[in-house]
Image 1 (cartoon, rainbow, N blue to C red):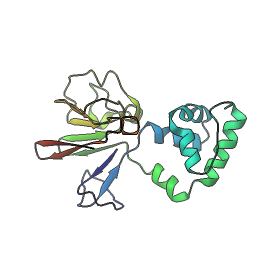
Image 2 (cartoon, helix red, strand yellow; image 1 turned 45 degrees about the vertical axis):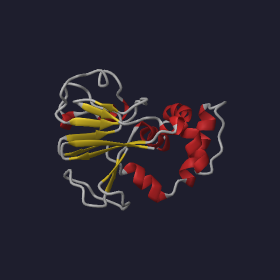
Image 3 (tube, helix red, strand yellow; image 1 turned 120 degrees about the vertical axis):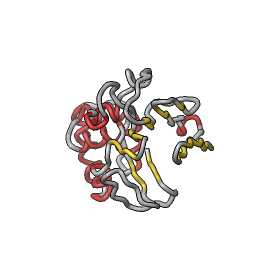
Amino acid sequence: MTLTTNGIVNAASYAGGRVSPGEIVTLKGNHEDLLLRFVDGELEAGRFWSGYDGLDTLADYGVAASATGLDDAVLQALRRDFVASLPPAHLAFFRGLAVSFRLGGYFFVHAGVRPGVTLPAQDPHDLMWIREPFLGSPRDHGAVVVHGHQVVTQVALRDNRIGIDTGASRSGVLSCVVLEDDRRELLQT
């Protein structure tokens, strides 16, 4: 999930929940979590990641892999080749991703939050991976949670959450929500 204040791309520091004009805040989701766990030696994360676009990412970095025969020896070799091909700046980018960002009455995450847990006490794993009980919860989470992770046919605009993942890679529909003061505008292409 990427947040921007005016569509201009530049590197940003966003400590303290503030965004300057032109800044972008990029958040860590479950795919980046799996990538980093694999890079750090967790072969089971690599095996799981391979079924969720991980093989495509490896190919983007010049590491050819097949979805079949991913035993530990093959995964270790893929990991070694991936680490060797991953530019240090890319690895630093992945490691520097925040798992959440709060701005005003909105809390931005990849997946969602655990209902009943205060926002500062949320488990990073939930912020990147949760589906239920978050998606079915009508609770006030302390801010409107803006999230992706769960593909929907239409943007879900609820009192307590906004789900914006319309599955662009499969559906061809890319959705964006513009939040300004109390207004919520939807852009789709």
